[in-house]
Amino acid sequence: MTDASIQSRRVVDALVDEWRQIADLMRDRSEEHWHRRSILPGWTVQDIVAHVIGTESMLAGESAPPADRDLAESPHVKNDIAAMNEQWVDSMRGLRPAEMLDRFGAITTRRADSLASMSQQEFDAPSWTPAGKADYKRFMQIRVYDCWLHEQDIRDTFEEPGNDSGPQAEITVDEIVLALGFIVGKKAGAPDGTTVTIGLTGGVNRTINVAVNGRASVVDRLESPADVTIRLQSGLFVRVAGGRVDPEVALTHTDLTGDRDLGTRVMTALPFTI
Image 1: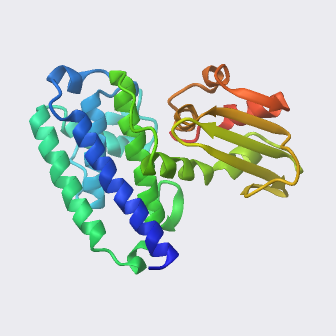
Image 2: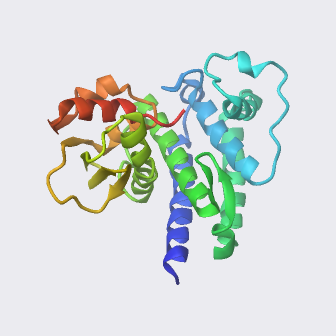
């Protein structure tokens, strides 16, 4: 197998396993659990699961159900993509837990079968993704990020931590790392010649280096200690990047060594998921 095919299988295996994780998390839950207001504005736990069903249904070629009201009026709907997501979510609000689990199982089995039959050429083919034009493999990496983050949303709502390490968590961090050049260089405005190290501990242990040399990019190593080193738990890092935790709150649980002003700007710029 080529490196590309190994990476594709890693992403697909993680995605399929993530769907199993969500199903296991929601199995045998009461209606109160399903209808509990989640940590995400405007959504219950059932709405989170409906969102995953809707996105995978769209990727399977289905069209979003027509809305019977103006969903754009909902305060948590911020853009056209969110409005389309809301069409799927709104269409499932009257379903019972067993019906939700049946729909979730049916669409994820269908999608798993489809992904298993894809060639490497299909994974390498150009594709629209929420992060812009890339290939289909990158799109599926984003799906791992999205689904795992939504599993964590449910866990945070239930106050039941878990599954914070392993392939899904690692791939989620991989996805955030791809945005760090833009976050550090553009959003945080790190000047040319600046270096930043982000040290993650907990579920995912990783050292990430960013150097600004004309433009900011992630590099394997730095020639000297970074201008600022930012140390925090990987779960907190992901939740800030995903827009779940306010950076100002996260900073109280983050260790900054070196240029604290730059470190604060990087943390403040970290959220990139709408």
